[in-house]
Image 1 (cartoon, rainbow, N blue to C red):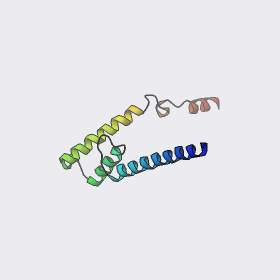
Image 2 (image 1 turned 90 degrees about the vertical axis):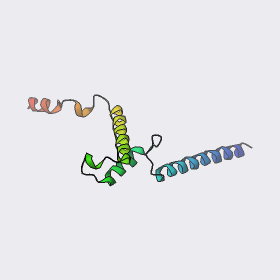
Image 3 (image 1 turned 30 degrees about the vertical axis):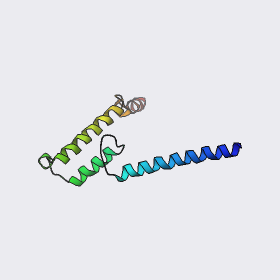
Amino acid sequence: MAGRARNWRMADKEQKEVEELQATIAEVSADNWSANSRYRCFFAAQQYYLLNSSGPEEETAPEAKKMLDVLAQCREELYLKIPKDTPASRPIQLMATAVSQK
């Protein structure tokens, strides 16, 4: 009896995983960069690359403006994830200490 219940739970879990995978595949293959898409930054960047513009004067179409807005939102989201104090922003003290000890 316990074995059957376990099998049912495993089957339910596997079914949920399959549904999540299918949803992810549909989202990726939809090639959309709407606000609720996890891949919108990727698709907007891809479209920007394919636009192959040589300057702002070529980016005046409504689709291009929407794409640039999405890219600006993505940039802001990335900036929010980066801490104010990163290792790269700190002064290097190891070199100065090693040189002064010689």
